Image (cartoon, rainbow, N blue to C red; front, side):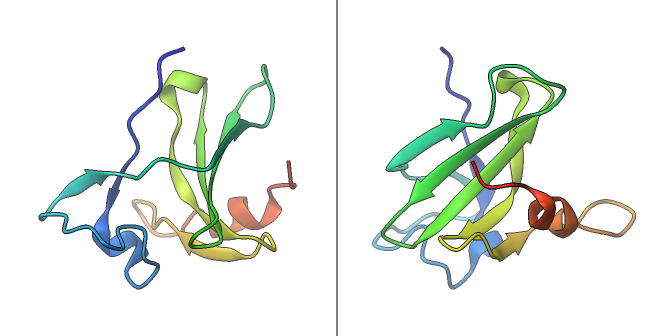
Length: 104
């Protein structure tokens, strides 16, 4: 299986410590390895991927039409509460989608 590169802007998670102990330069950076990596379902209209970072107690959520097209949607904490969402072009955000996502 081909693993997609997860690129986040440092400002997305400012104060969340995703790059703790690292010194990323400006722009986008590959996220550190997750302790857990799981998908919601093998098939379906949309694919959801969770990456668990226990040292920071949050999940990074990715979504796409297929597994190779999954993109960053936001972060949820260990209690499934919203930590970070993405602002969408034209207004709005991914917050409602993340809040409605059932645990898996």
